[in-house]
Amino acid sequence: MTDYDLLLTASLGAVLFMLMAGNRAFAGWVGVAFYALMGGFLAEMSPLVYAHAAPVVSSMGFSMGGQAVAWQLDAVGWYFAVIAVGAALAVTWFSAGVWGRDYQAKGGNLRLLNVSLAMNVSTMMLFLGSADMLSLSLPAMESEAKAGSPQ
Image (cartoon, rainbow, N blue to C red; front, side, top):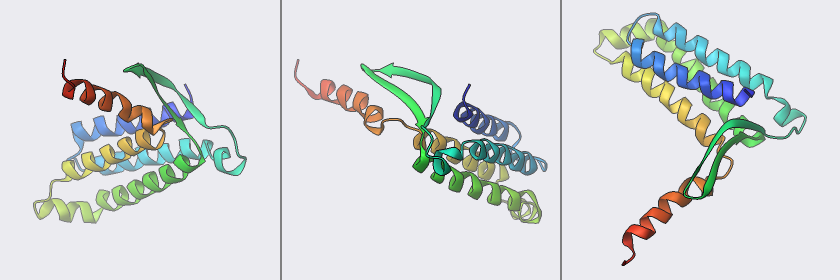
């Protein structure tokens, strides 16, 4: 399992945890721990930028519509992943404290906030690591073309 796989696993774990316990008082602090863990995995991948290392390739992948779909994190993806995880860490830190209690007291849905944030980060980790953006859209375009063509 590569560091990128661990990053994806942590992001999906954050989504599942927030779905189950996102409205609890301690959920924000657990979210902070998840995002700090993701930051640690990103720190381990910093040679992507500073040492011009080869992209970190995920061990997961599949074929769809004759096209291979795979994930790898390169230097540009790493940079934006750091921004996404850093922003999530800051927002979760604030929502875990007084701001979150005030938000909930005013009728705000803390679970919705936590789940949305975790899903945003998880989706960004998948999107930023897409090895080939075109391969993600080709099967959809191919199936639309077949559906629209006369038989």
